[in-house]
Amino acid sequence: MSRTDNERRQTWRFKSRVRDAAKLCKLTGQAPPKSILFGLEKTGTQQLIDTAEDVLTDESGLLYGTRGQPAKLKRHLNQIAGAFRNRQTRPALPYSIRGLWKADLFVGYTDAERWVATTVKINPSQLEGAAGLRIGIVPTKQGARDAVRKDENKNLIICPLHHDQDFMQTFYEGWRIVQAFIDADGQMPKEASLPRPAHREVARILTERRDFAVIDVVEAIGAFSQPGLLETDDKQVDTKTLKGQSNTDLVIAPLSSDRGLFD
Image (cartoon, rainbow, N blue to C red; front, side, top):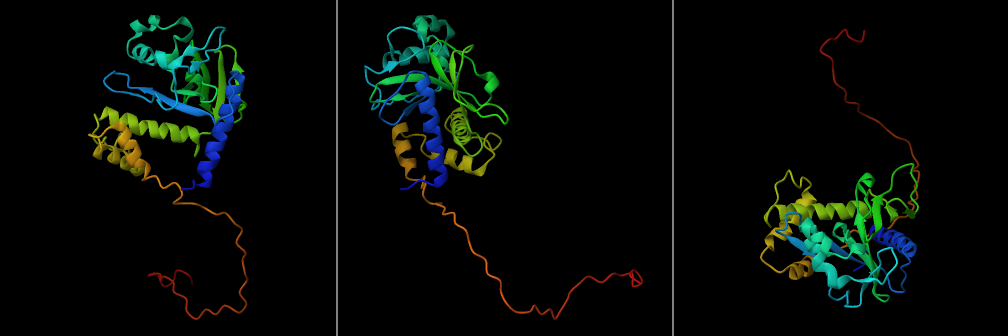
């Protein structure tokens, strides 16, 4: 099924920006870049780690921005999850990747088997560097530079992306739906949590399938997306002037109760 023009543009812009950021991390590959979601619920009662078993291998290395051999990403995933939930376990991580629990995504190339940890912030002022983090994705700001660049103070590659009707908005809207669903313990969130009807419909689909395995649910709802349903075709429409005279036979207007008002 084909994607809409807007979705294609979003995907192209996102991948183009990610490639530029990855190059500054000395990360290159011939295959299209991949991203792995790494999300954890702060209370520790729920966690979602997309380990992408079909993507990561035992040799998948993580580039962390300092000298040394790449860390084996797959081997450290459980340690990273533990460090997120319990700060006392963070010293158990190797010093070079001790800040990986702050990651939101891992971006990389499957052919090169190299990845970098990425943090996503809706507010650029909240962007912080940490040991192991390499890319910081933030929305562009009007009047500010939008070039992919390195921030020496944070030791991060800053990757600005458009927000409205683009990747940043899509990412956070989807993540908020998941957060609200988890916070409601797999039940339908309150309307105040998800006031937009479209967001509540997604949560309703998840609620109806709360007793099924996550993989099965993801496969099931994929059939509902229909990304090509609203395929648009932009074109210039010609206008034609109609000949003839207009003919008005009747005019209807309100009558004032004050008969002398317009005398």
